[in-house]
Length: 346
Ligand SMILES: Cc1ncc(C[n+]2csc(CCOP(=O)(O)OP(=O)(O)O)c2C)c(N)n1
Ligand code: SF4
Ligand SMILES: [Mg+2]
Image (cartoon, rainbow, N blue to C red; front, side):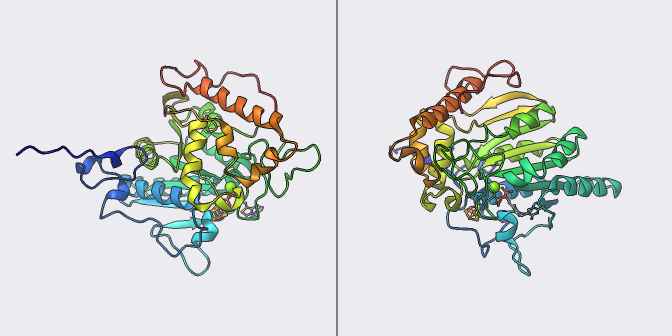
């Protein structure tokens, strides 16, 4: 009898998983026996990208290690919403460090495990962009430089959300935060272009560096899996929209993460030993205004008079990323990504 082949559309990169696939092709989250590193009952806001990213990342670590892992967590939203004393949503050995020392605490755990001959137990450090790029940056650089056997994951929501949306070194130009308000001529954050943590990690020539977003969760899982295949220092930078801090609808978290990639604002790539080995191509390039207009932190750019100069500068930065990382089909990353490139206007 003739039959129509079923098309498994849901196995695409925007999908979580599909239990009809061969077991080795299924995503971690499609596994009925998945580990659930972080369970329900935590207090993240509705639509929190950080909660989603952490759940997928740590479940993937659990699968890669057979549950033989320990996590150290910097102070920040992820720590606060998951562990209001005396409760915890974590189903793994998990320790809260300080705001600034999660990489150092992770290093210490890895050293202790090595001394005990238990290198089968793997260590993950994690924190927000503030804990990673600002106050924890020295510890992180030391962890990279010593090539300590830790995977460090930064959940980047582009500000200090836990303490009321203050600017961090990852806050993008033009964004409003509690301490970068649009006043007079100042159009939100005008301190500079921020730190590019993945490129700085690459400059340490550690075994593995990757970026990911919560809109492509299978890509995130596969990058965690790849990271766990290496020993030594590894860095994963996950773009996680924050509805509260960005003034965005909870339902737009995935859409915003996707637009960040499709505009070129957030390049998704992976690098080994300091060299790019793969980029996620943009399927359909979108103008940055599509991304900006969904967020109240950029609303001042579209008021009367509109700040077209700032919007144009943001578009130029996105275009520069597209050229630099070779994000369009048929293009390749620039030869030396770490070579100095001229900054566009701020
Ligand atoms: C030494 C020190 N300074 C300040 C704080 C207050 N503090 C706790 S979390 C935080 C911001 C966290 O921002 P981020 O790392 O980006 O994580 P998010 O909450 O955005 O996920 C701040 C300023 C602290 N705990 N310790
Ligand atoms: S403030 Fe942002 S990062 Fe924090 S729990 Fe809410 S949505 Fe998540
Ligand atoms: Mg943050």
